[in-house]
Amino acid sequence: MSVKLLLVRNNKILLELPLSGEAWSQERLHRELGFFEEEYERFTKLFDALSHHTRLRMVKRLFEEDNHTLGFTDFTRELGLNPKIVWQNTKKLCDGGLIEKNEEGKYSFSEAGRAEFLMLSLVLRQLRTMFESI
Image (cartoon, rainbow, N blue to C red; front, side):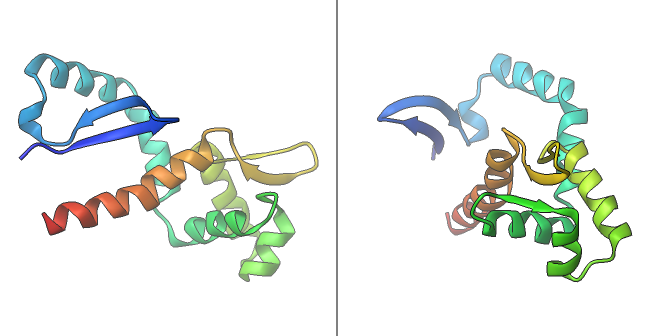
């Protein structure tokens, strides 16, 4: 059985990826694995940023805000975290490219961070659930 992932915008296919190993040519698979290896450090930082419950709570809290922006004290007060924990975890989230700090000292999603979080958490969870049922 061949399964594909399609990314579509305005009825135009932007990306079509086979999700079955046998659907990849050896050449394409080798090339993609090479790209992944080149970007390994970036993926490591991104996965590290998402690998702690406190950071997930912080990202979830950003999603709950209308403007997706929170200050340092908002995290401490609203999530019941001490300042050291907030500092360590905002640093990890920034290092992972998910959030950034603006001139006023407030945190919000980076340009790609919001999409990366959705892709790696919500979409990946749904794909995993789908594959388990096949």
